[in-house]
Amino acid sequence: MSNKAVSVWIDFNKNGTFETTERVLNAANNQVTPVTATFQVPATAYSGPLTTRMRVVMRDTNSPAVCGSFTNGEVEDYAVKLIDLAVCTTAAPANITITNLTPNSANVSWATTTGATYILRYRKVGTTVWTTVNPVLPPGNNYTIPGLTEQTQYEVQVSTKCNNNQGAFSSSQQFTTPILTYCPMTGAGTNEHISNVTVTSINPALAVMNNTSVQNNYTNYTTPATLITLEIGSVNNKISVAKGWNGATTSTAVTAWIDFNRDGQFDNSERILISAANSNTPVTAMFNVPSNAYSGPLTTTMRVALRKTSAPVMCQNITDGEVEDYAVRLRPCSTATPTGFGVNTVTHNSAVINWTAAADNITYLLQYRIQGAATWNNIYVTSVPYTLNNLTPSTTYEVQIAANCGISLGAFTPVQVFTTRCDPEPPGVTVSSITTNSALITWAPSVAGVKYKLRWRKVGSTGWSNPEINLPASPVNTYTLGNLDPYTTYEVQVASQCAGETSWNSYSNPVIFTTERICELPPPGLTITQLLPTSAVVQWDPFPELLTFCDTEK
Image 1 (cartoon, rainbow, N blue to C red):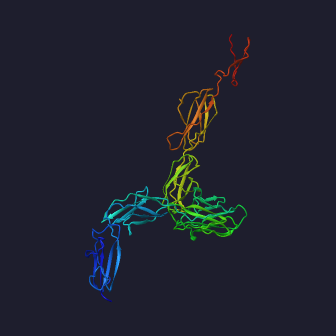
Image 2 (image 1 turned 45 degrees about the horizontal axis):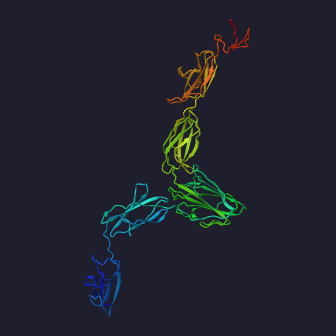
Image 3 (image 1 turned 90 degrees about the horizontal axis):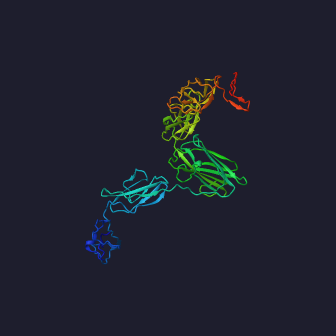
């Protein structure tokens, strides 16, 4: 190994000459390798659009010349681009662009500034809390935001940091994540098809999805009527698929998948029904929902495929058969006891039951009964509040609730007691045992704890001048109204007041009756007919067992 010296020049001013002041390395003639040096680019260096040149000379003598030929050594020239970089500034970056959008990620990039680092923040449009990335890691002007929610509008801002001084954030750039999509798959033909799909959750409170259809090659069902709701971690859910033929019955295979992890792929582990080709219908299977299934706010998808002769293959079109997709909502479930359980808005035949759900409560068993009854009435419910209807007026009830997951119940809330109002409809009123000066008033029903009152007047009177009469309490339901005038027409009404209330319900419709006549009263209905010069026929309404006389005057 022989000694060598190395010198390097850069033509900073691009005048075609490598000057002594432009030498950036001058290594001694020895065997050291590699040789290094640091250098500065003059502030007055060429800053145009062209390149200049760097020359590297290695030979067996100190301080080799930049030009000329020699026997032992080598010369290499390199193109050099001199860039006049801007001084680091905290101004917000420009040209922020959003690319590579997926349902759960987006790439953000921007123009760089010399010596700067960057801080990025993003949030859902309409919210107040930012997620901040500080600093953005190298290369520093490019960041892929993970963990986004599909079909959601976001805004992103970037701030520049120079010499530990942070500038203002840029104006917001908005973007919307796309919807999760699945591989296209469709059937063909006019005979073999899916005639019904039914999915039954192990949870009796969750609605059964039952959809009957005709041959349509491919349908994507997304309406509320075809929404499937399942508990995460549940077992023994059931799917049933009925086959249909518009012509001859053939042998068909059925497979169903649910994208439990919601990654846009139907994996083999996500098959919930595998039925080999046959003519049996319907075909059924029990399936479980994994405990680590997707638990976010969006729906995932179930795909059902039917194929003649052989099993369907995911993402491959079917020559004779059909494909149907269904929206599926996966929900975590807890049997923790609800809080704030209570009863309000009680009427004569209904009561509103309210409570506050514990975390991940989705369904409940509501029990109620008449106080003192031995058995409970059971109602599975999914929404808060819940209205109990068809209750009996003026009746005391007990009610309690527990959260359920599948067929497992949590602890019940303490029993709440409430009493329905009396029926606000006025009681039925009848009048009997009418005499010349009294009548027996009867009302029904007569309910324990309910007050009743009566008002009466002569027909044709203005207002109700007679004092209202407080009627006797149940079980008595009659009252003798006395001190009436004979042969006079009256009307009576009865109203009720529910227990514990201060307002009276509406009065009943008036019942009209007429007291009996007495003989001291002139007979009614006096008429004179067949009036002749010497005679006339006189008629009147008779009074039983009464003698009459006639007084005439000329």
